[in-house]
View (spheres, rainbow, N blue to C red):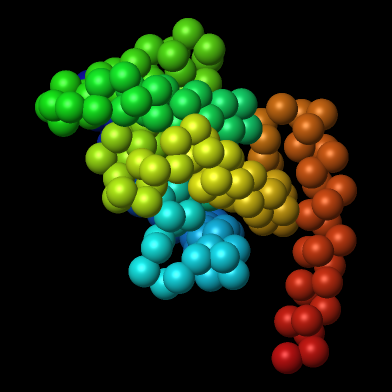
Length: 207
């Protein structure tokens, strides 16, 4: 009896270890493609309007967002409501805090982050990179801080929408991925992704 329990525990442990360590190369491929494409598009838009030294559009919190919406597609924190709402609310709070309490930094920075967390919790738009978006509004470069509330629109909302559109397309190119998790929304998104998937396969066949 004890031996059977030990063997059963061993089999379960082995299965869990396998599931946690196995690498799905299709998943990693689409994570790479989508994150590269999303960030590249934001960088390209920036290059059209700003000099290479003014990396205003490429704010650091977008990198963390890419991990969520392209690497953990099914996470509740990666869904559109959280993605768009979390960034936008946090940006507005960050700018407001900077205008009201610009100094000292050891008060304004934590205040912006803490208030953004509370706001995201109350509005059910919790998105971890949002905390960084609020922080950047306070500690960013002079160019970023001079944007004022425009910061919430450009670069935050514009960049988030670019990342979102890429997520809708790339995260629905395979059967393993479904984004957003809302069934009705994701079925419509599949209608966008499938034609592109067929085109992609044709291109592969021609190479």
